[in-house]
Amino acid sequence: MLFHQANKSRRGGHNYRKKNTINLKLRLLFILLLFNFNMKAQNLSIDRVEPPFWWTGMKTNTVEVLIHGKNIADGILTLTHKGITLGEIKKVENPNYLFVTLKINPGVKPSKFSFTLQKGTESLLIPYELKERTPKENRNLGLGSEDFIYLLMPDRFANGDTNNDNVPEMKEPSIKRDTLYGRHGGDIQGVINHLDYIKSLGITAIWMNPEVENNQPKESYHGYAATDLYRIDRRLGTNTLYLKYAEKCHEMGLKVIKDVVFNHIGNEHWLYKDLPAKDWVHHFDNFTRTTYRSSALVDPYGSKADKDILSKGWFDKHMPDLNQKNPQLARYLIQNSIWWAEYAGIDCFRIDTYPYPDLEFMNAWVKAIQKEYPKIGIFGETWVDEVPVQAYFAQNNIKNLPFESKLPGVTDFQLYFAMTKAFNEEFGWMNGLMHLYYTLAQDYLYKDPMKNVVFLDNHDLGRFYSAIKEDDKKLKMALTFMLTTRGIPSLYYGTEILMKNDFDWGNHDKVREEFPGGWSDHKQDKFTEAGRSLRENEMFKYIQNLATWRKNNHTAHSGKLMQFIPENEVYVYFRYDDTQTIMIILNSSKEEKQLSTARFSERMQGYTTAKDAVSGELYTNLKEIKIPAGESLVLILQK
Ligand code: CA
Image: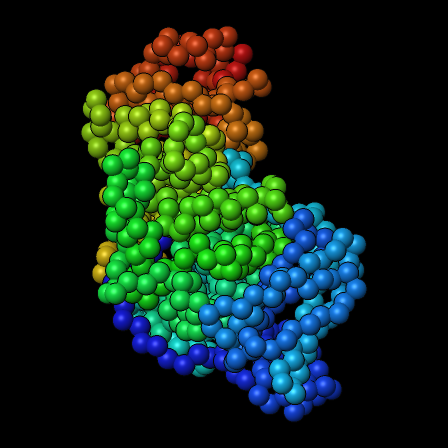
């Protein structure tokens, strides 16, 4: 999700609408074919074919290909190729489109072929390709509680290639690092250059904000206003570079999370500028913004008007709201995700603004993705205000709901709210650490709370370090909680080096600052130990040690959770299974505590000593455990 100031984007000409060109790799072949067969087809041209190619051997044996070119709808499209049948050819309101279903029979060999488009005396060959699927090993691995996510904004992390900083044909043609919401020049090569750094922190998965093209006139560095869903933004790299990034991640044992948006596109998207049909986008007589209040969808007393505005209102002025009830659009979006999953072997999708698109469509999307990739990870952004509302949008245990979500996991905003309060407030009946307890006590609502993503902050929130007033001890305790409670922890880039700032509605850049060391003119390089201060190194190592231990300890990330009601400013919980019991103690008090453990015998019985999970320090008396003021302990119990 990305909130913006009202943005009156002007509508300029589109960069890609060049006659007689089609997408990317097909271009050369297409020109060759033109010379061979169609030199005089001057009135007939195609500028888009999407998906640009497909694969043989997919579980779904059809693909709907969008073909775009001026007034092509009354042309006659044919195809003769062994094993491939031309199914239905659909025309839509706009005569510049044809939607063609290809039926790919089992056993069809990967091949290149062409459609023939005949109109009057002219004909055009439209090349297409069915590629061979890449063997499954080390791809589409899924995401689970064993993982630890690193979230980064590619424009702001590291500039690995200054050649792509300025791209004159883009509507935002150059970097403007000193201008609010300007592009900074960070890119995928910058991330590739620092994979070692990320991995060294104990991270197992990288989530980048969307990398697809955002060719908007301004404020598009964040990636949530797409203008081409099949192309990596040229300021960030190329499709080939993204593939290289994904392969390199997989070689290094890092998973790839792709951030996708189905609710809206940018108003400079070529599809929006030449809509296939009016109903691809929700229209209002006057600009109508969503209320951002997803509760309207859950509310048994909710009005249709409120539900409609939530779902159909625009996320922002420059973000047209897509109507996924249109079957061509729905298929277009589903195929686009499958295309990226197959092309780059990505392991997980993070879905932006999950409550806002048509929810039946979202279920169909989940089903289609899981059909092709049963193991693939999926979590949705659920920036809502209550646990039951959040659970409504996930697979849940709530009976008799009007809608049954298939979404496996959510971004756990409720636990985020709880953590912000837990580590800031004085302890009380409903305050401080109690928030963690009460929030987790509501996990009975989720089918599998272990699939929820746990985070202290993200690109849309104030940095946690500032929220706790730059208190290192509190950050350590919060990190301990995040890395030992249930779910999939997610670290926002820079937390490890104590990056700070509150979220400012007038300046989002404050929480999306350049990572020091990512640009050649930075005075400090915090990717290196030598470039970090003592304090920063201490935090870096704290996370590194805990995350590395967690990664290698099955019980720590996948064991059952048992929590005890916090008392006397101390919260105790356990991760356990048949092999191990781990005791976690958080002391939010300003005083050292001497914890009597009799209350926890249910989990501690039979254990006589314990070892600190990170330092290895031995605890020989488990009846009374001393915890310093404001600190936490992670103890592996021993018999
Ligand atoms: Ca760059």
